Length: 183
Ligand code: PRP
Image (cartoon, rainbow, N blue to C red; front, side):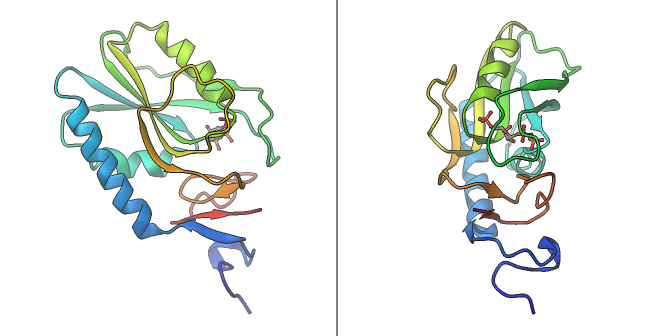
């Protein structure tokens, strides 16, 4: 018998607790879309989603931004099947879109140790963007040094291992419509 957060989607796994439910996420994503729309009053905006974790957040977010924009992706990976960051950030896909002269908004699902962002920020700055900002759905505020603090933050996140709404553990749970803690 399934109870609590256990469901067919989790394969019967009982998650510890739902941290942000669907309605709370949708409300905050709407607000972030408005903040971003207001911030970028001119110029070309390229929304750069960091895969795979940002895919759901990015698709909801761009539909809430009321100005012209382009979308492309970066693929980086830092975790294996562990629940702690390995710190070994690998870039697996580089955006094909020209970055020079554009406002780049890097969309990230979660800032944990900050290693992924620090690596990407220096890489993106070398491409000569007009501006570079980060929009992170979740921020744990545990990074010792961040090359660039996110200008847009969805939620301050607890220090638990979070899954759902794009976030995974060993590639599972990304399709949960809410964010839950696994540990
Ligand atoms: C996760 C997450 C962030 C990053 C955060 O990505 O999506 O991109 O780690 O951790 P950090 O701040 O400690 O660097 P992951 O490498 O697991 O790949 P994924 O997006 O494909 O899940």
